[in-house]
Image (cartoon, rainbow, N blue to C red; front, side, top):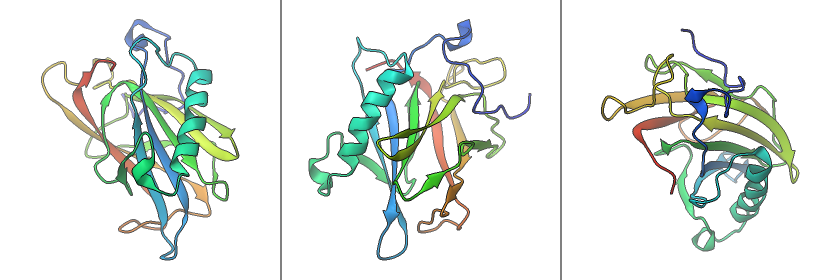
Length: 198
C-alpha cells in the first residue's frame, strides 16, 4: 500500500483505530532569533488516565495552555518543561495527538503535513490532520495511531520496533534552523511497543 495521506479521517472510525489518546506531543515553532534561526521546542503533555483526549475541543483547550506555557521566557519554570529543541531526540512511544503551533508571524499552509517515506517506512500511523487558528497561532493537529503496516497492526506487536518519519513543514516565511535546509522538514521516531495511557 502506498504512503497514506495524513489528512485521512481515522480517529475512532474502525476497530483498528479505537484506542483514544491521553497525551499530546506539542511543538512550538517560534520567531527567528538574532542568529536568524527559528527556535523549535517540543513538550510532552501527559494528560490524565481518566480523561481521554477523545475530541478536538479537549485538545484545543490543552493547546491554548501549552502555547501560553511555551511563551514563558524562563524555560526552567515552564510546566510542562521542554523535552527537546530543533527536532533533536524526537521520539514518540504513545498513541497520542501530535500538534504543531506556529508563531503568529509564521503562516502555515493548511496542507502542511505532507508525510514522506523515510528509510523505507510508509505512513500508516499519522492521520486526522486538521489546520486551525488558536489564539492567533496557526496550529496543525494530527493523531499518531502507532501502526506498523497497511494492516494497521500496532508497532511493536512482534517485538521492539523503530520507524522513522518526516513531515514537510510548508510555511511563509520558510523556516530555518541549524543543520536544516531553507525548505524544512521535521522528523521523529515511532518507537514501539506503544506505552499505555499514563
